[in-house]
Each structure stands twice: as structure tokens, then as C-alpha cells.
Image (cartoon, rainbow, N blue to C red; front, side, top):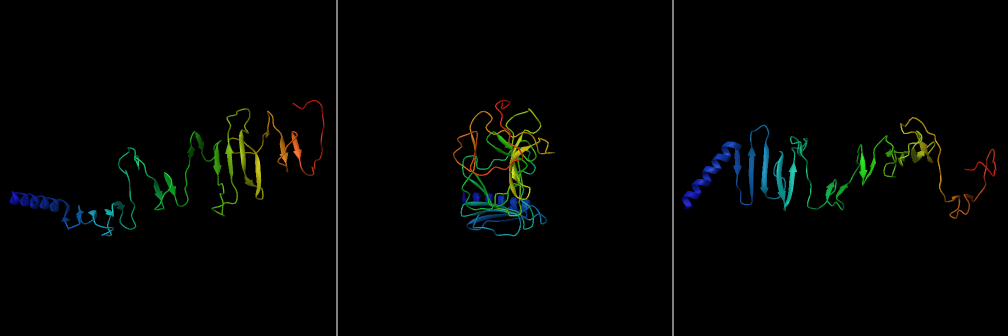
Amino acid sequence: MNKLSLLSLLILGFCFKAAAQAISIPTDQYHLYGPNSTWNEYLQIGGNGQATNFAFVATTNGNLHLDAKPGFATYINHYNQGPTYINPQGGNVGIGTFSPSEKLEVNGNLRSDRLRVGNAVFKPNSRSSFNSFNTGLDPSLTNGWIASDFGGSDNSSDRLVIGTGFGGRVIIGTHSHDLTSWGGDLLISPTGGNVGIGTTIAREKLSVNGKIRAHEIKVETTNCE
């Protein structure tokens, strides 16, 4: 029985060697080279870390490593057009970090043409959008804006814009939906509520704690609707 098992193992090893050019079975790991001298793929199961400068799959203390040859890329699901699932049963994913604390944590810049948070979709140059918004992490971004559409279609200036510009000043205004011009009416508390400037307690429709400069102030008892 032992002779038969040994013979089967030798035959199996010969077949692997013929198909993949080389196979070694050390005490603590398995190596599989091939399928030819040009590609130099390398499969290592067990062991501890990188053992070759070629593309390889290896483990390190239970961790799985998938690495390309230095200077080359690593493709995931490159030929298959189906979905790719990462940690469907739990766990976090980190890019540029070894200790992700969220489902996806990126240590670095993130660029996307579209961002969806719940049912809110933010997309550059759209009615609900953001553009070059400076969070303080990149000093080169000196201005930007966040725009939002509340669903109104009464006029072309249906975007509420909050951002910076015009010498770095903060702007609150409206912008046309096609990004061609500023303009349109800006309604503040149209259905109720007071507005305060320089005060946290607005007792009137407009409470100003300070001086007012104007070319004209008109007071009417009618036409205020």
C-alpha cells in the first residue's frame, strides 16, 4: 500500500513538473513555477512573505498576498465582466492603510465623477454638485463651491450655491442650471421666520446689529407680498 501511494505521488509530481516546468515541495510551503520562462508566474502556499521578484500569490502569517512583478500592474476580474465582491460577510477595506476603521478607508486623494450618499447624488457640473471644494487638506485649491437643487423648476436659476470666489470672499447665491451665469432671486425664509445679521436673536423679519449703508430704503404699507 505504501509503495502504491509513493508511486502515485511520483507520477503526480512528474505530471505537474511537465505542465508547469518546475514544482518543489519544501517542508513548510509549496512552490509552483510556470507555465513558461517568459511569464515566470509563481504560486507559493504557506511560508512567510515574498520569495520571488516575479508575480506571485503568497501568504504571510495567514494573510493572503497578490502581487505583480515590480513595475507591472495587478488586475482583478480583468477578463470577467461580472461583479467583484470584497468582504461581503464583513470586515473593512483599506487603500493606502493597514488599519481601515470604516468599510472603505482611503489614505490619500480620492477622485470620482459621481458621489452618492443615500439618495443624494452629487456630480460635477450638475444641479446637485461640488467643484474643487477646499477642505483645508489641499492649499492649492483656493476656491470652490457646493450646489444643490431642491427640485424647483420655476426659472433657470434653480441652484443654491455656497462657495468662495471674487477675491476669496464667501458667496451665497444662485446659479443657472447650465453653469452659464449667476443670477436669479435668492429667497430667505419665504414662508416665515426672521433673519439676523450680526446677532443670534432675530426679533424682526430683519434684525441688524450694526450700521446699514444703502442708496435707497423704501418703506411701504402695501406691495410687500
